[in-house]
Length: 318
Image (cartoon, rainbow, N blue to C red; front, side, top):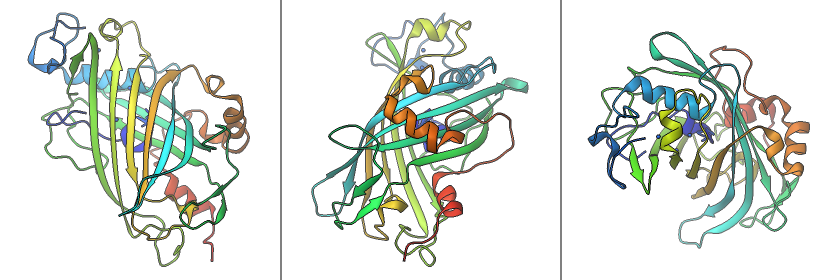
C-alpha cells in the first residue's frame, strides 16, 4: 500500500482504520451488513470478518498478490502542503508515486511482505517532475530529492496485535480489520501515529534534520468490492483509497527545526505497473530510482526508510 507507515501499521479494532501503500504505500470486502455499520457485528455467509487469518490474507491480496507469484503495484497521486503555526496552509508540490509489494505465504496463515516505493515530486501547475524547487518559506531554490523507501521486509501473522513500533489507543486480541459497509462497498480505515528516532541528527544535519525525534501521523480509508473480497480465486485485489499524512519537513527542504511540517492528501489505486503512470514520471523513476520501481526479489529482513537512505547517500549542506 501507499506510503511506508501505512504498510507497517497494524489496524486496531478500537478505531476506524491507511501507504502505500503506501499502504504503501502501501489496500478491501461480501456481506449482508447494513450500510454504514460495523461489519464485524453481523454474520456474513460470504466473508468471515472476524477471522484473523482471512484479514491477514486480505492485506496480502491488497498490497500484492496472495499467490506469491507476482508483485502488486499501487499508484498514489495528490498534493503536499506546508503547515506553519499561525500561518495559512501553503501548497508545496504535487506527488506521483508507486509502491511495489511481493507477498509470500508462509506457515500458519502468515505472510511476508517485500516492499519498495518511490514518490516523484511534481510542479503544481504542469504536473511534471521537479528537478529544482523554490521553498516558499525561505525563497531558496533547492535541488529536489525524490522520495524512496526500501527494501522493506516485514511479516504479518493472524496472532499479531502489534508490530513495527507504532502506537495505538488499544490493541486488538488478534489481527482484525474494522470493517464497515458503505453504500454496498466494503471499507476499513487506518489511523496510525508513530514516534521514532530520526536518522538525521540535528548535530550533524542542522539544515536537514527536523529534530532528534520524528512524529508521523497517517490516515487512510480503503474501499473494495464485496464480490471480489469473497472470491478467494482473486489473489490480487483491486481497491480505491484516500490517504492523508502529517510528517516533519523533508530533509531536502532545508527547514531545519522550524516548527510545522508537511501535510499530504492522496488518492490510491492498484495498477499493473509503472506503465500506468504519467510517462514523464515513469521516466524519472526508471532513470534515477530504478532499484525502487520493483518489489525486492527476496526476503533479507532489511528495513530501509527514506530518512535512513538520505543519511547514507547524502552529505550535510553547510
